[in-house]
Each structure stands twice: as C-alpha cells, then as structure tokens.
Image (cartoon, rainbow, N blue to C red; front, top):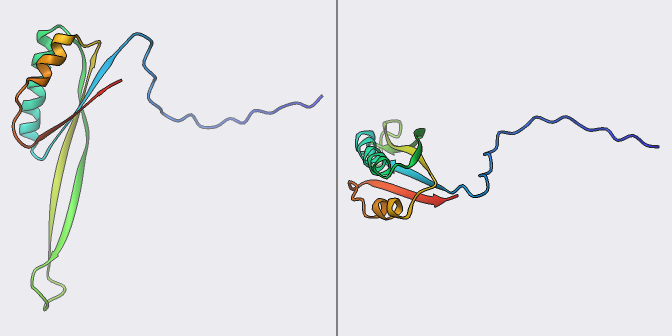
Length: 122
C-alpha cells in the first residue's frame, strides 16, 4: 500500500468567513485631510451608537501616497525638479447586524465634501 505524504505549508492570513445569519455592513471612508476624515467617522459612529449597533472600528488603514515629479523649467535645467505628493487617508468601520433604521439614517447622513464612502454588505 502506498503512503501519502502531506506537505506542511505556511498558513496564509485570510479573512475569517462570516458566520451564518450574521450580516455585516463594512464602511470604508477615504479623504485627503485626516481631520475631516476623523470628523466624518465620528458622525458615523455616533449615528450607529444611537441605534445600539455593535461596532468594530474605526480601523486606520495604510495611507496611500501618490508622488508626482515635475520639471521646474520648461526645457532648460533638466536637473531642477519639484516633487509633489497627495496623501489619501483611510478608515474602516464594521457594523454587525445593522437594523433597517440604522441603514436609512446612514444614507441620510450629510458628510463634508472631499469624503468618499464605500459601503458593502458582507
């Protein structure tokens, strides 16, 4: 009889699948200014806590940095350059078992301009 060998591999860190019957509302908030971002996250958390929702977060995600290099002059002095960067700050909020009233109040929430929100139901 041939024996089978089992290779041990490194376990990868994957997201734990959601349990049956538990619904999650995952909110990703992005903005260029961290102060505006924190104010809008505080509004979302206050709204969720008003409806006694179970919250996870806000979890700070890594800041995305986009760098742009530009020549200072039009065609002479090639070595004279300037660098500019844009920083995109991100936060993650999970709401476990959201009620219909909570979802409705979150959609009616007015947030400052420059704040982008992505909502997923897991």
